[in-house]
Image (cartoon, rainbow, N blue to C red; front, side, top):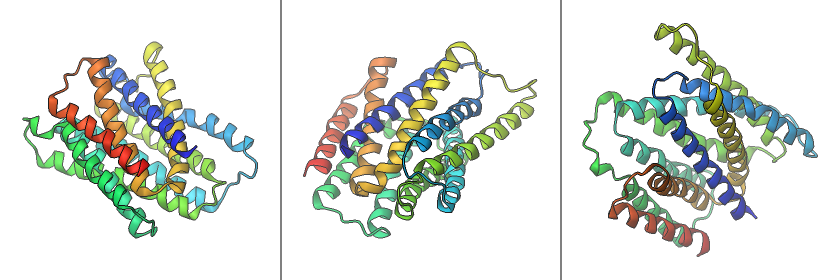
Length: 293
């Protein structure tokens, strides 16, 4: 059942990424702030998580959930902030690679801090997945100049993304499993407030009248993305506590990049090189080795 839920999580994550790409294409004039886009999404978490919380027997509010909720909400915001800055100041391919490679930190944390066992097959799969990610994003084909500014943003992105994986493991170890939704409710509130503050600051900086709210198609994208994000994050919090780090983080991270690369080819007409196709095949082999051997 855990493996099936992990597949659902990956599919929801990939679909959410595709919706964000559609939003970016529709929002060429920057009429709808990316902070507003994400704020609407996290607001939608609240009714979804509230229903789940009240329908689950034994669900409780704990001090641990509140503390981790504040930390996780702030980390989610930092993830978006550094992601957007790195994407706009440097090569997208290298930024994607940095995002995907963060699974190494979370995996090592699970093995070293949480004392999780790791098999030779999982080590092999993790190494293959790393090489597959490098081939899929093709950083060497990016001819853009790397700046100190981009490096600092990318470093912050790497730290925030790695921190999310560590928070998953630490909260999973500290929680009894009946306060997951309480933690995410707090995180959604914290992240939403930060998104709105920065959206307002962005409007003031750009001397716009006010933050433009979305209508029509972009609003639909916001709603769908918010629901999908809530689903896969809720699943990830649960799954990271019950699945080995050496399996969960490489497979979910690698699958996201590989599937996004494939979707980019067929949905957005992005061309795949022979190296990228080889990387996809290698990634699929890594998933099989990590999960089946």
